[in-house]
Each structure stands twice: as structure tokens, then as C-alpha cells.
Length: 88
Image 1 (cartoon, one colour):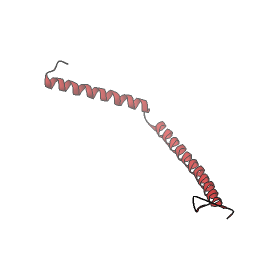
Image 2: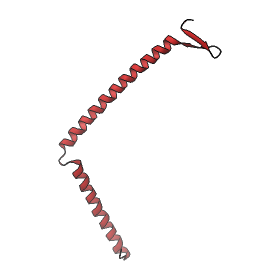
Image 3: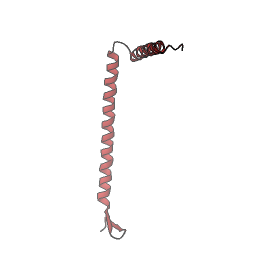
């Protein structure tokens, strides 16, 4: 029982097995992190290429959508005021 240690009234831990499991877990975590970094890099590259191929930049599209929303809101407000005969 050189590699095992007894404590808590008979609970045994095989230290070499525990150390081997910890090492393999660490190696697996490194591979998982490397894989996640590769996936993020691939998605970022694809996203940049997609934005470059757009006819207009995303900021122009957002400004146009905001303008359209303001116009629609104003039209709705004007229609509500006309329906309810409200001066405001």
C-alpha cells in the first residue's frame, strides 16, 4: 500500500491513478481551449469576409433602419392624434 493512503476510516485514494487523471484532464482542457480558439478564429474570419461583401456597411444599414423606425413612429403618432382629436 505504498501508493494508497488511508484516511476517514477506510477511504482509500490511489495517488498514481489520481495524478494520472489530473494530468489527462489538464491535457484535455488544453486541447479543448485550442479547439475553441480555432473555432472563434474561423468564425471571426468568415464574419469579416461577409461584412466586406455587403453592398453597404452595417452602420449605414443601421442608420437607415433607425430613420425608417422614426418615420413610422411619427406617422403612427400623427394618426393617433388625428383619431383622438388631440393637439399634442
